Image 1 (spheres, one colour):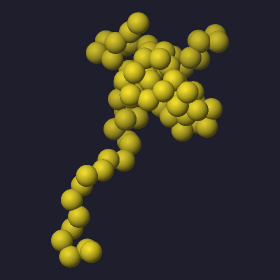
Image 2 (cartoon, helix red, strand yellow):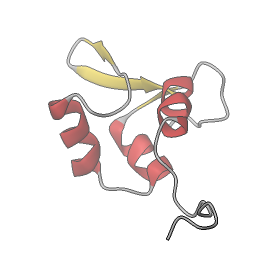
Image 3 (cartoon, helix red, strand yellow):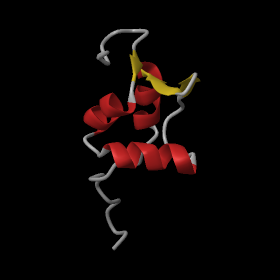
Length: 72
């Protein structure tokens, strides 16, 4: 199994699920709906570059930001 700390690591869907804390089914659904991170097809195998996972996670919305005062 590759780790996200290896610069050119290729990750499988189980690795991506572990990194994101979500299920393998979610990772597969993202791929089916073309909503998740970029992936590679090597024959029938699906692999993800660790830098693509990091870039995709950086584009996800975040919560907990404070409101501008007076915007209630």
